[in-house]
Length: 191
Image 1: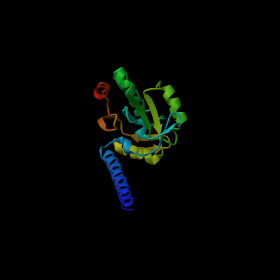
Image 2 (image 1 turned 60 degrees about the horizontal axis):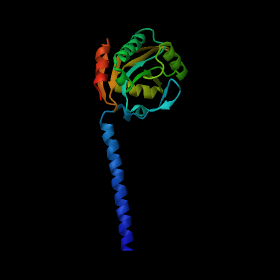
Image 3 (image 1 turned 45 degrees about the horizontal axis):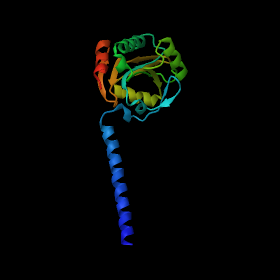
Image 4 (image 1 turned 120 degrees about the vertical axis):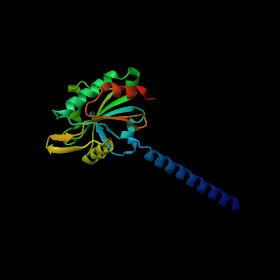
């Protein structure tokens, strides 16, 4: 009987220690500043559902746009293309060029897919994402992107491109006029 109690006590102690270690690992990840701790759900241009943590293991170059934009977004999209063209081919395979819509009402997966085709940004390394308004706002806050809806199809927004390493940690952020060589050099220097 004593041995049974000792075995049960040991099992409870072991399980308790394992759970505390797992909680400690989760807590450590949340304090690292990784974008992958955001648990929001997203859809890509193919309608596939994912979370940002599904992108872990690749460097990210992120910009927030909306497809009906006729002013700043075409410049940001062109900047993303220029950045991609200056990233070393090996590093480009380790990178996702991520364009996130601030207009989820209008930028459906079908609209994003059509936009990607129109912009010649189909396939790797390009990915377009949309989510619900709250998730978009949360990510915008993380990226320090400010935006405001002016009319049903027009937004005023910050022009920021952000680079994250493979662990989702921000390593570079550029606002306004983007020097594509500098952003590409950041990606080329990452492990």
